[in-house]
Length: 113
Length: 113
Image 1 (spheres, rainbow over the protein chains, first blue to last red):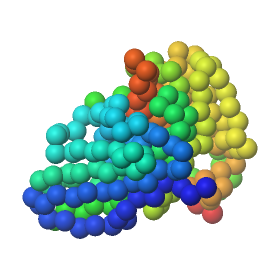
Image 2 (image 1 turned 120 degrees about the horizontal axis):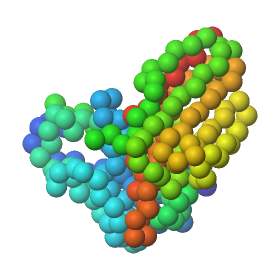
Image 3 (image 1 turned 180 degrees about the horizontal axis):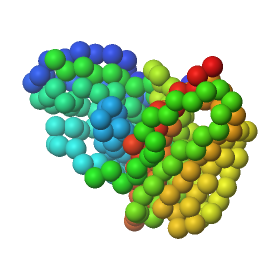
Image 4 (image 1 turned 45 degrees about the vertical axis):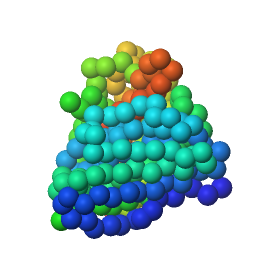
């Protein structure tokens, strides 16, 4: 079956702009999580959605938001971009909310100039 | 605050050598997962350990969960160039029906042919 698909793969923005990233989970998976990966901080948890409801949230400012649609596809938005938001944003899906393997997409690499 | 510390941060060894990567925390986890991430891709699950003291083997890779479920190790025997990648441990905590995964700082492994 098809894996987790993230779009766009690469994007460049300038400070102050906003960005929306999209994630299509594996068919049948209802949980979608978002992570930020940087060389300095590693893989940091942003939030997790399950059946259109945010179930977990990491320690990121309110500029980072997300949502999940009825077909389990998810989007995350970052407003008022800062240089420090440059990172690889990874989406992961799993079948259940508790336990099980996370299946990651290839990520969206965001560069903020 | 990084809950999961991995060591070493970087490791470069010759093909055929053995190595051990450590994942340490002061927190207790309900389970611990190990992932490997290759350039341009998302992390891929290698193993999940659940019981304190549990040992799992995956071909040349041996994973151990500490007795107190606070730490874990990954031992690779006769390393191959295909083992090159970023190794990430991830600890799971469950609270009120929600599970949150915290990723370690990562170990970047390079196997020299």
